[in-house]
Amino acid sequence: MIKPYYEKRNKTMYKLSMIATGIVINMCLGSVYSWSVFRKPIEETFNIHSMDSGLPFMVFLITYAFTMPFAGNYIEKLGAKRMTFAGGVFISSGWIFSGFVDSIFVLTLTYGILGGMGVGIIYGVPLAVSAKWFPSNKGLALGLTLAGFGLSPFVTAPLAQKLIQSYSVSFAFIILGSIFFLIISLSALWLKFPESSDKINLTHLHTGNKISMKELLSDIRFMTLWLTFAIGTFSGLMAIGISSPVGQEIIGISSEQSAAFVSLFAIFNAGGRLLFGAITDKFKIKISASISYIIIIAASIMMLTAANGSIIIYTVSFSMFWLVLGGWLAIAPMSTMHIFGAEKYTRNYGYIFTAYGAGAILSTVVSGIIKDHFSSYHFVFVPTMLLAIFGFLIMIFFKDNVPRKSENII
Image (cartoon, rainbow, N blue to C red; front, top):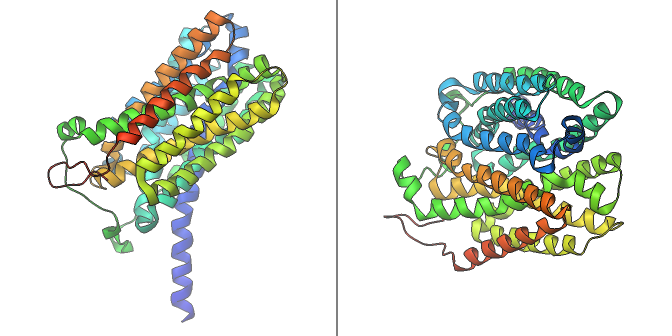
């Protein structure tokens, strides 16, 4: 009696260690969400405008999003360890090289291209590992694993602010890049998929019908999920990219205080992945997406009324923006699994995830243009509200049972 219990307990702990490892890796990957802390120091260092300082962040997210579909095809072929280590080399190189650049253009190449490729290579690995170790609780497993990505600024934002303030923005890039290499490399040694001998019951994963890439891209369900994902990430990525400067320029807080707020918002981003992962698991995309858009609309209206000293409005509204972005990074992968099944999941979600890149482009360009034209970020919350209304209308008319051949939509 004692031995079987001990073995079962050890096996459970081992499985949980895979989620813990994924959380740690995602804490490194999610450091991109601390970009707003770097933004003003970079503008001062290179003497550039708001539109320019958003380029490395935008290119990072685009590269990350468009690397995923290709990297997803190699995760099971090359294995979790090799994919994670390779991505770690790209990420750390991008951050370390960024410490030696002398222009925003080169910074965009080092941080944006190298760093973005690294995250794109790794991102699907912890998710795929967690889903296979916990097939009957994949929603919770994915939500927990993804929480590390959203929680990253809780640690990296104040750390980056301290390094920038005590030394320089260049030094901060070098130190953080070195830390990421060490953590990701060690984590890669532990991460692995379950072997056949582990007898994981994979029948809990709905395999669905096999779908070719051409069928996927022409499927109305793919188009709907892609568009709603792009809308959902637009406001969140915009808020993340400007959290610190908005706090300083509109609300009137210091750079140290704004970095502390970014850490606070990170908790909501992580919580959003867990909350919306559970909601999507139970109610699927129609309900979870509709809730997310209502939250975005409310947060946008609040920020349109904000002024100097409106700390409560700033705190509540930006917590809501970060919560929803985290939510969509649970809604999208869970909906991909629900709709298209586990077969070719990493490939399918990779193509869905390009919507995240579209959201990054649109949010960075729109916020930069509005800031440079009006000399304030105040009006960026008009497009976040309007797009959220559009997304909500899509969900109203979205039918859960639109057939594709012999399948139901969700």
